[in-house]
Length: 600
Image (cartoon, rainbow, N blue to C red; front, top):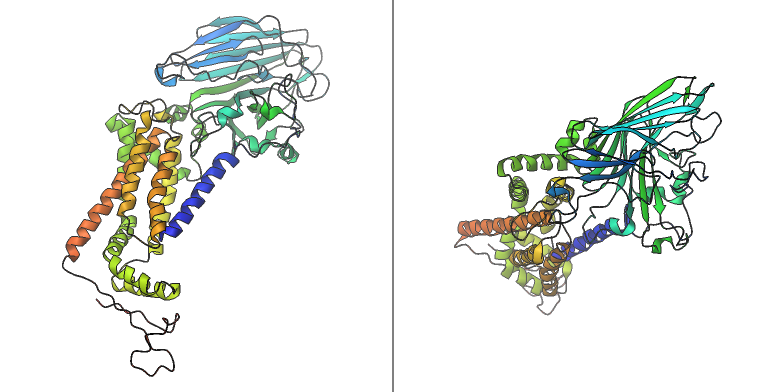
């Protein structure tokens, strides 16, 4: 491919990358119009839009202690206040001093994970007077918490217990009607998260680890939704209920709130079949900042909500209804998710080329079983992929090597037909045909065929929790973050510069010089932000590309040593020219009136 064309495709690729990063889901430029608000009521009000009962004055907590996490539940909503992961790997600092907490800050009171509401959107004879119930802590031990609410009309029992498996909690809700007449309720169980806009914004080519989405998995679809799916105008779509929740079609398998490395999943286990519903709400300090200026608020962001919405149930006097929900709240570790079952491994978002990415990740994990090092596993994976794709690359490498040998002849053609691009192209094609050189444009086809694999590998490495806070060598303290002292970007830039020097010169010298410095510069800048795991892959891939280029060219030189190629351009005399060979003062003939011949 001519370097000018390569530059065009490069700029197009960078433009697409930037557009996806900043304009796509979670991007910064497609927010709501100033002053235009979502029709959904904010989380601090009830579904009817009226203020809930005040928060109970008494706030008791119950702690569930497990080997891999500590969960703190509160009587305010009988929901999770904190869920802190254990182990050095899941800390916010390199030295492991601050455990990661998967629960949103406490100022979003009505959107804590495992919150259960029982009110219907409207109607009489409801089981409970409001959703902010005054729960009491009835019993607790190291692995369970039991909450009870009781009034003249209902007795509610909510038990949250650890299953003994990593990051799992089981929630059981029993609703008993104590009223003398039939009463109705509608249970919802939520998973929630709150992130500021600043937290979810990535850098050039880098996805923020706090980038969050809501996921609804049903028998018909798996929907992954970001804030752009909940613009004010979107709430008019048929998928939205009269409560302003988006309902996914099909029978519910599970719902989740998912970031790059962690997920909070709710799976219906016992009770009537629920609906899968989701909503993403804008959140800011409404007391301090007006709606028109909300994006300027330091806490402006989104509350991500995914819930199981059970159908309405009417209970006769003294009748009871039991619900059970299994929750997974932890890292998106493939083995742990597979143990949960119910297809929750789909919560890992591997992008458009997920089938390819799944194969690559499975192979990467196999390699880790042999090397016990994720860094070296990435190196071996890159070598394997490069070797498998070598048959697609060999024609391009041969073409580049042949063009380097034909440089004097190509220079002569360029000089002879510098003012006639059509005739120059004809002569170059004849030269390439004579020496069995693939047209450079066709030589780029193998590269294009490889792109799905590279994109899949890029997505897999950038979202693999296996690389999270894992060191590799003295300059890479974390494969999921940038390395130390910009070592990888500098080495990659230098390696890319050397690789460009190996490319055969084509076209305008200024264009050649621009490409020689532009490509290494782009790689250097991108690697300032990308995870070091991707840097290991890109660096290994670049060195393998250089080795292949040098090796093939050396082999071809040994096969063609002693041979040479000459070029002679012959032109037919123009019509009416009677002199042998034509008039040398006339300009070269137009395409179709001359013929370029190559003499071997």
